[in-house]
Length: 267
Image 1 (cartoon, rainbow, N blue to C red):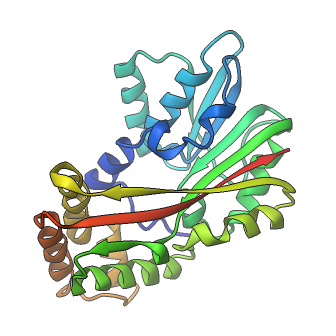
Image 2 (image 1 turned 180 degrees about the vertical axis):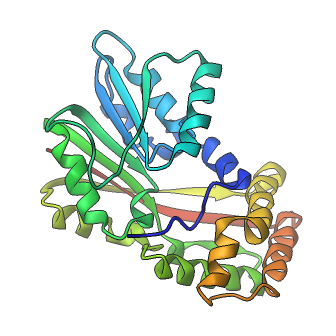
């Protein structure tokens, strides 16, 4: 089993809640039609799920968001109520044992989930099981080893090293993007389209968002406690990592880019 490195600290949930279909599932959007059934695995606070639901809303549509812990589902239900959504069903479920019959959904989707799993191939295989013939398994994930930024602050270099080591101590794979096609093939998926896209953060708003939430994560989130428990970092150096993020966020020349790989597999 893998341990979720990010946890559900407010800084993490806020970051996840800012995601949209436009910035996180644009590769999937052209495939969606009204009336489709969609499963969102690892839906978090539901911001992407609700966008998917809006895209397929219509007669016969069904959208289900699943998580393996209740905390993000509670927030997802609140977010759905605020948006007036009555379509999405929110359920507690395990990615390795989804509680649905074979061929239930037109699309099974996961965003930045596989990097946190000890067995991403098994999760993809399970997503394929619940997808109907002719349907799609869609997944997008990041690659921490492919992240680049400016300025080259030593504290951020250390942050990345601590994150990758801690993720692997948790039985995850932080460099998931480079493995996506291989994982898909290992799961028995053969008709697979691959694409890439990036997130980037710059400008006053982007720096404040990305740098600000990582200042908090470095000190208060599961990343902080787990990195110390794993012996990867010491409590004394975490404030230095947070300070590096503060320095980065206040530099008008600063920017950060994150590579993602996306797969669309036809069942």
